[in-house]
Structure formats: structure tokens, C-alpha cells
Amino acid sequence: MKILMPVCAFSILLSPGVRAATIAMEDQSQIKVPVPAEHITYFQPPQQSELPDNAYGKMVMDGYALFVDTKRQAPQFVGNGLNCTNCHLDQGRLANSAPLWGAYPMYPAYRKKNDKVNTFAERLQGCFQFSMNGGKPPAADSREITALSTYAYWLSTKAPVGVELPGRGYPDVSEPKGGYNLVRGAAVYKDQCAICHGDNGQGQKAGDDYVMPPLWGKESYNWGAGMHRINTAASFIKHNMPLGKPNSLSDEQAWDVAAYVNTHERPQDPRLVDGSVEKTRLKYHANDGVNVYGQTVNGVLIGQGVQ
Ligand code: HEC
Ligand code: HEC
Image (cartoon, rainbow, N blue to C red):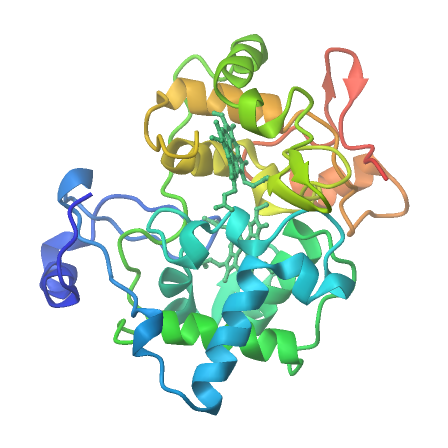
């Protein structure tokens, strides 16, 4: 990736031709950027050395700590083995890894997921509830949400408000023509993922801490999380995994392995309707991208959850 100063990125950003390659977010707006990937210049967030030594700088650092060490910093709001930075790489700075600087300037925004305009605080609460399987999320005016918002605001220093920057989210990887294949996905997993994430997706621990995060099972993201969608996981994986070798998988391999990961059980969707997987599927999963929640795969009903 070529890195230019923000000023150059901006001249590209603001030229009218730029709004064209689809960066499809799970909902909300889309922009089109017709620039070939290798020529896209990404927004550059500030460095920690630039932080002022005052109450604001301290709050930024609190948010940073929460983002990279979530389980230890906010144990009451984390119900699995993940930290925010496991899915938002490089401390929430990395382009195409749903960076915080791509997100913060785009809120408040309407989300189909809960059919209302969400503030940035509500968006953070959603990641606690689903991605972190955290139960009742921290209050909008809590220390946790204030610190994380301050961190995201700081990373967005000098970013334009309401302009979708290149590198936001996990840019779409469209489904291969023949669809995905779980047998091929298992083979990709064994060859390219198991060495770090474990044969059973369980991750790896050093003492109490995960050094390699789990991909399924009770310590993983729950069935309500964005990552449970095969299309979203394929996009994340294509741009970010195997760690250190981004963009090395073909689109087909990314889809196959995403499908393999996301047909394994994980904690139940906390929005479970009347204790029924089928009702929950109809209400929340039938129109939520590509996913297998509530479907029967190889004779097994998926979405029963694990505890
Ligand atoms: C299991 C992976 C995972 C974890 C862990 C996770 N997130 Fe996310 N996050 C996602 C996905 C997937 C999206 C949706 C991105 C998309 O639609 O392209 C998302 C979206 C977001 C967004 C909105 C991005 C945007 O551009 O609108 C923010 C902000 C965010 N997460 C913050 C957090 C915070 C804070 C934490 C920790 C408390 C966290 N996330 C933990 C996967 C994760
Ligand atoms: C060299 C080790 C390594 C390999 C190989 C690797 N990963 Fe990862 N993976 C990681 C680490 C470490 C993280 C967390 C990144 C961070 O915190 O910066 C991660 C994060 C993830 C996440 C999001 C966090 C979570 O636990 O849900 C997913 C999904 C994922 N990897 C899938 C894959 C897939 C699929 C493959 C194979 C194509 C793969 N990884 C290969 C080390 C690896």
C-alpha cells in the first residue's frame, strides 16, 4: 500500500471522480471509488507522540487501552475472549480493517440492524453486545464509551465529517460465481489458519490471555455479531488474514473459509425471540447478508448456541 500525506489523500478524496468503487457497508451509505486498490491513498491518523499532556490526552489513552485490552479494562462488559483490536487491526488504525477514523466521522447514521438513527455511542454499544458477547453494554455516558469515543475522535483528527473515506469498513468481496464450498473451506482452514487459531477454532492462550483469538465456540463473537455473516467475514479475512499475508487468498478461498468458520457454533444471538431459533432467524437473519443461522447444514440445525 502506498502511503501519502493526508493532504494528497484529500485531493483524491475531494475530486468528484472518486466516488465510485463500491465500499459496501453492512447498511448505510455506499460510495464508489474508481481508483485501483494499489493507488488508493489512505487517511493517516495522528501518532501517540502528538498527544497533548492533559486531561484530553489522558482520556485518549484510556480509550486506547480499552480498545486493545478490552477484557482486562472492562471485564464486566466482555463475555468472550476477544478485544476490539482483534477485528479492528493495528489499534483501530488499519485501512480495510474497519478503522475508527473511517467510522467516527460517519455518525450519527441510520442502521437497518435496529431500524433507527444510531449515535456513535450506540454503535460502540452494539459491538460490545454482539462482537464482545458482553450482555448489557456500558451506558452512553459511561467511562468506557466516553473514552472509546474520545480515542476514535482523536484518530479522526483532520478527517472530513460525513465523507466516506477509502479504507472504511471491510471492503466487499463479492461471492464467487459458484458460491462457497465448506469442504474447500475446511482445507483452507487446515492449511492457512489452524496453525494460529487452533484445529477447533479455539485460539491460543498464554496464561489467561489469548494470544491468538478464538474463531468459534463460547469464547468467540455471538450469532448477532456482524462477523457471523459469511460475506462480512470473507471481506475481513480477504483483507486481513492470514495475519501478515493480507490479500493473499483468492476471493473464493476467503468465502470458503469464512463459510467454514461461520457454520460452527458460537454464543446465542442475545436478541433470541421466544427461545426460538426459527423466529430469530426470520426476524433478524433472513435479510442480513449471507449467513447460515437457523439453517440445517449437513443434518445439523445451526444457531443453537453454546454456553
Ligand atoms: C468479532 C470481530 C469484532 C470485534 C471483536 C469488534 N468489532 Fe467492531 N465491528 C465488527 C464488524 C464486522 C463491523 C461492521 C463493519 C462493516 O459493516 O463493514 C464492526 C463495526 C464497528 C464500528 C463501526 C465501523 C464503521 O465504519 O461504521 C465501530 C465504531 C466498532 N466496530 C467498534 C468496536 C469496538 C469499540 C469494539 C470493542 C468494544 C469492537 N468494535 C469489537 C467486528 C468486530
Ligand atoms: C500467523 C497467525 C495467524 C494466521 C495464520 C491467521 N490468523 Fe486470524 N488472527 C490472528 C491474530 C493474532 C488475530 C488478531 C489480530 C490482532 O489482534 O491484531 C486474528 C484475527 C482473526 C479474526 C478476527 C478475530 C476473531 O477471533 O474472530 C478472524 C475472523 C480470523 N483471524 C480468521 C482467520 C482465518 C480464516 C485465517 C486463515 C485464512 C487466519 N485467521 C489466519 C492470527 C492469525
